[in-house]
Length: 147
Image 1 (spheres, helix red, strand yellow):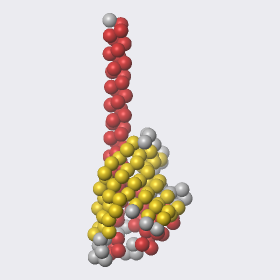
Image 2: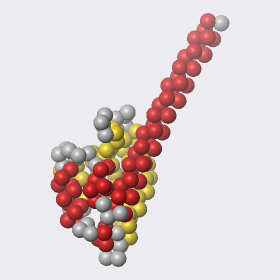
Image 3: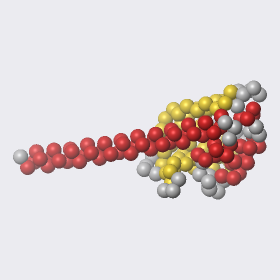
Image 4: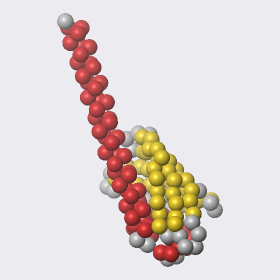
């Protein structure tokens, strides 16, 4: 009987642990999805500064695009402003998450596609994002490779 109770207790602890992990993962994925949706909304309102709220405001931010890497939040913001000087150049953004992979309680890896519908010509591509959960700000993009 004691062996049965020990095994049952261990199984219960394992189930509770898996449930907690699934709930935490679900909340993190919802928060990341919300962050990416807020970025799309800001972009579609012509608000590059609002779009950048999804990024880590740090000199350690890395953005990699077709012209190579850009280092730092402010350099990335200036790159966006130069490449997309007005709402017409920005167009309408759509973003589709293909996969989210939890690397740890602090990091997620996201793969997706993006598309811009513009009168100047449509653009589209893929992205990979590394996100980090920061204590004061929540989830932020710390590395973006978009092509």
